[in-house]
Length: 376
Image 1 (tube, rainbow, N blue to C red):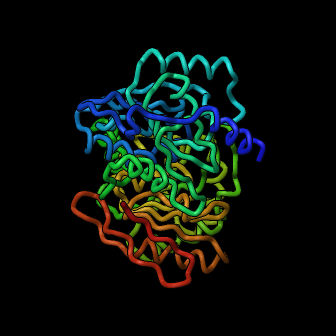
Image 2 (image 1 turned 60 degrees about the horizontal axis):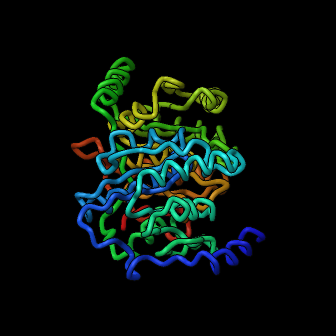
Image 3 (image 1 turned 120 degrees about the vertical axis):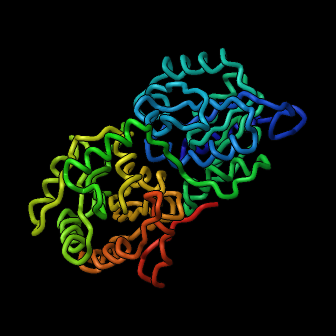
């Protein structure tokens, strides 16, 4: 509340005005800065903005300012021309004034024409103001968009990716057909194919399950993890009732989650714990049939490579955080048996395309707590 009050006061002093009142400069190839210092999943949800900028302004130079741990989300992304490492700036409680001012100096030296802030923090909104950028677009969440020249509201009942795209709409940029995207390298795809062949899964219908997550720099929320017993039941049913083979994935920090799923299983799943980098996991997901996991980065990655993605939501809002793709569906957890039934059904109702992707998620039954994905 105090931050909001102070923000409103500062907005009276730091009124955002662009030259001529325009949202964007009248130049052919602007130098654009996109500021998104956040978790990997949030950065993936911002990739539709990068896609729309490239499509509308093909000659522009697009630079992404991103946290040290999140740059992997845009590796090989053709819509990004350069990266600026924000370090810890943008992660609440993990940076101070010295680090903030250092980033301001870096941005000021680059002399960007346009800055787009995809963050609710007033300190992030002020970055391009202090850096001397004349055209400053971004989110105005509760009046915290200090110094912005073009602002879009950030309602809490709207999908995060759509909120980011609202910033472009406010500037008159079309967002039709945009979706989250990730581009695995050829080396990562080769590694993923070899990995499946080593486990004799090369010709199988592979469902990847990631039961971990809930850990980000600056925050830990393990309540986002659904029941290990539930994941075990779904995995068993997929391997006994369908032709699917289940592969469990996770980082080293997810080891206990994977063990807790494997212990009660009556069938045997393949565990690839700690065996893939982020890019290699993206490649594995791209050549797999479907993905199941909690509200975490792997789910956003799966949908960004075009694979059917089923996310089970326990402690977060599926309306806000469902991966932004037509192949994504969210299931709000209820009783264990009912949730298992809905997850199995969501993973069963699909057909794999010739390119390793899956068809659009079917519409959920009315009142079952499922959320279909979509694109703009």
